[in-house]
Length: 302
Image (cartoon, rainbow, N blue to C red; front, top):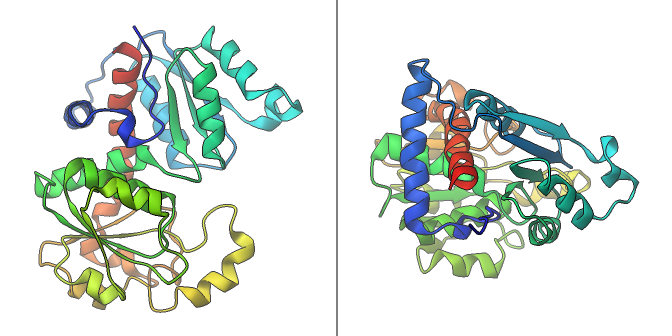
């Protein structure tokens, strides 16, 4: 059987994504009941990290353990990748030894090169282009709060970055209505806007985006690798901070999402997480575990 990669959301069909999410909800219920399945017994996931991580590493490693398998952490400094071994050679070797590879990298092109050479599933744990695993968890969280996400009013406020790109892709797949407020010069890339299939609207201010929104979401203003732009970005994003007053403009049943880590005093006001409307952030983080377990089952077991 041909292998399936997960480099972007669109690598899986809409029906497959719904199947993965359905399984994620079931796995979460089992986890809460302390019931564990051995569906990936003896399978091994290799995890290549070129960027630091908390949620991605813990969720994949814990997820493999809970499903009866195991995970191996690899960094460029600890492997031959750091000494110049071609990605393609590493991909071919790992394909002989493990069941799947998850890569967290700064260049999406590296993921594509690795996947072309590998004969096992390759998963995007984050790239400069997108973050599809995060969106699986976010959609799972929206389903928990609202049920059907089709037609849901979702506001993205802030940088049109890799997570925003995946929101655009998800809007096109799941049919929610995405409104984006981003400063001039920080809008998402046009090729990702096209992936929304018309389910996106751009507005000039955060207040317009938040008005009657059912979901408000954001990300840090300076992502990893953009630290040298931090001062410039602080000026550009002035007025784009998520505050309780901004949440007041949203629908009465609105929830707030943030992929974390958050920088209080920048994209969110200090103390925002004491607001009950932001409690969904912690369920969202936890859902990384369950959504990725379901994804691993789907990719490895078919």
